[in-house]
Length: 100
Image 1 (cartoon, helix red, strand yellow):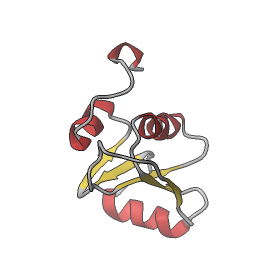
Image 2 (spheres, helix red, strand yellow):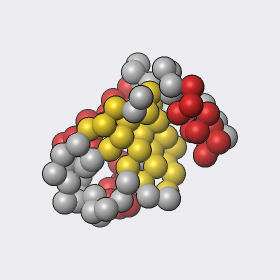
Image 3 (cartoon, helix red, strand yellow):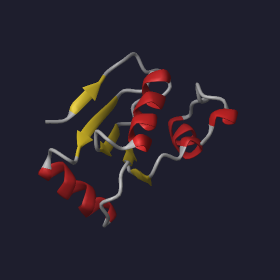
């Protein structure tokens, strides 16, 4: 079952945000932390435990790598902070000096 993180998100507007992740993926954890710090509502799909979500991710991207982030109809493979911020129309809570 997907895990939802809900908050008062003014920045994400009405765009639906889904992340396909695994519990041990460092980039997945960074992406989810980024969403929380920017008050972005998202649904987390744990592809390590949920075969249906894993199949859905593979169908959308053709690959097994995580994170896969879907913002509206846009798919982002990996944690691309700048692209995510642009798609959501937000200024990141992280400074660019913290980019890895």
